[in-house]
Image (cartoon, rainbow, N blue to C red; front, top):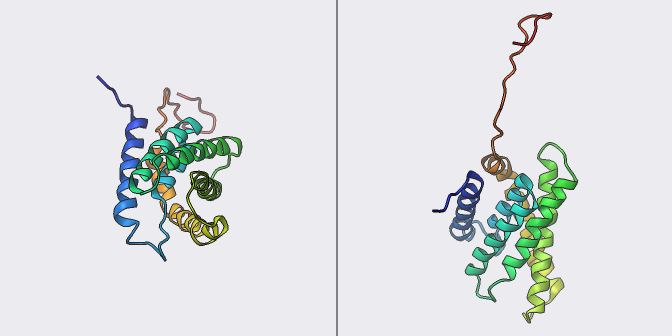
Length: 182
């Protein structure tokens, strides 16, 4: 019997919701054929919340879902998002700060890396395109749009994906200035 813990279950649910958003909402909110990458947002948030290993796993499965949507070769998005999920987790472990700005900057940087890596892998697999043209017309606008959407959804999704710490002991506050802890 397979037992799913909360971390795995929340990752699966987040990926399915992101996949549905990518398929159903993404085309509707596209601006000049540029769509936000909801699966990448979930991957990066998972990496920021739970670390590089979880980010890599979620990135791999998110990439597989993206590969299912495309008409190109099967696997490049899984490879790229796995690497980017891992890098986002490592970046967040190395550069830690409270607040929302640093995670959004990490998301923007890793989103850019995701787009550049994907362009490079596509070129290596023989896809005919101009690298700089694709970078300027597709990759950079996608990074900006994904980052804008992430600013809106990051606080909500990160709270949902974060494990709740359990308290082993409870200390009561002193009743007066000179009181002892109970």
